[in-house]
Length: 339
Image 1: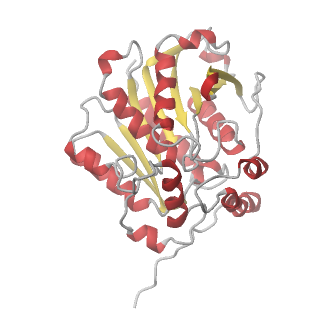
Image 2 (image 1 turned 135 degrees about the vertical axis):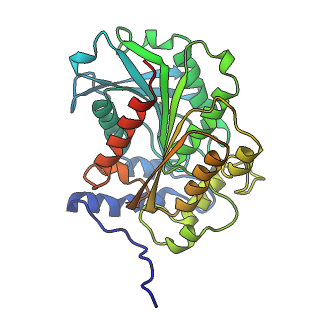
Image 3 (image 1 turned 90 degrees about the vertical axis):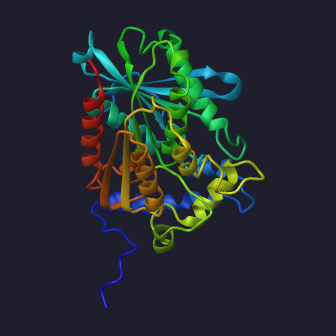
């Protein structure tokens, strides 16, 4: 008999990051069985990083409110490299993960991640603070993220001091997101592609989905085998879908189970996609199914797989595959920009 496949990834990361990985599970304490979130407890478990207009690790940050009535805002990351002045700078609109119910652009893991992307890709990163479930269910997150794209399309950046004097390349705009944010990337990209004639200057040059959160009622092999994986499990994913989807919906709802709608037909203008998967991610099989669905419809899509990677590995800077991912993101942006 052969050896059974491992259910735990090798920890190619320093002790500090391994400790942070073990502490990441504490966020589950804020999730109540009834599908609500203990926001007070979560605030203690989710370190906040303030925006700083002065360079920190080569990047300046600022927060900007787009719609105060629904607390819709963005955190903008601008490389402090003076060589970008006078050049067209790529724009990456980022949607954070967290099962639609956790985190924000000011959460330490996402501030660190977006800061790194901005610095290493020499891009403006606009990280969206969308409304969270269960207080705001489907389609609130999709609506908020689409509205941020509309804001950028309507000259809204002129009112953001950090961007007012920069040449932003909206003709080569990229969407990026991880986990639930990767799911949002798919749905926002489809909304954009369905009405390209209604956009003034935003043209999506690419969609980057980092371990996107898709699902369905069936249990996949990876969900069953990796039921004790770091960060997420099938049960945690079920809880997240329960908080986000409409009350009478199951996990075959089109928000989660996107494959049928792709097979029916996907917009011609849907942008080139980068799909990143990890060998120790319970969502692995759903992500591969997504990649295959796009490929079968003739879409330009690149699959990048890290066999030793667990879900959300990219928020751990010292994990061995994180620098490789930064290179993939940079290569994807450069390959799909039309100058």
